[in-house]
Length: 210
Ligand SMILES: Cc1cc2nc3c(=O)[nH]c(=O)nc-3n(C[C@H](O)[C@H](O)[C@H](O)COP(=O)(O)O)c2cc1C
Image (cartoon, rainbow, N blue to C red; front, side, top):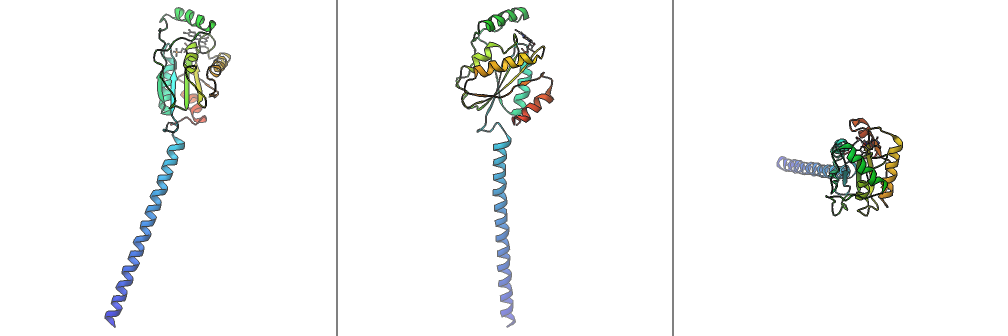
């Protein structure tokens, strides 16, 4: 009888241990699959530059200010950086550059770009940066935007200038809107490159931060 009882107890112990192991295995499985889902949804929504949501930071800069801004924005957004380069470089002399830029604006010219990517299809969000030239955007910004079918793309212009005149900024946004047919051109960012607080706020408001 004693032997029988100890067999029953041993069996009970084995069965309950097995049941315990089962429970903890199930719990582990469900925790890890939950956290995978959580990670995937974090990647989709929190990082704007995932494969489903790619950002291009394209800019034109003559004396480096827009370039500084673009580099900072690319860093914050995780976007790919592209400097728009004219086939014929602008004169390094300020007055000569000014004269040429004014002629281009007055004739609504579209200066040729030397490094135009064949396609920007992989990007659904484009941040486009430029300095104010003669109260609007440089005409080469029109050359860039009009080279592509931008339907369905989200465009965010960013710019700065010597005077930081709001009317000139608004003119430039109107020019970007005309040049980017089919795209949603959002309100732009007008801030000095050193004003990282304003840049950060703009990127955050528009859910563009990495
Ligand atoms: C051709 C040319 C035209 C400009 N026109 C204006 C203008 O209309 N209004 C203004 O406030 N600044 C004007 N500027 C000054 C630039 O907007 C300013 O220097 C800007 O910071 C240059 O940016 P970047 O270094 O990216 O080229 C002009 C500069 C150049 C070279």
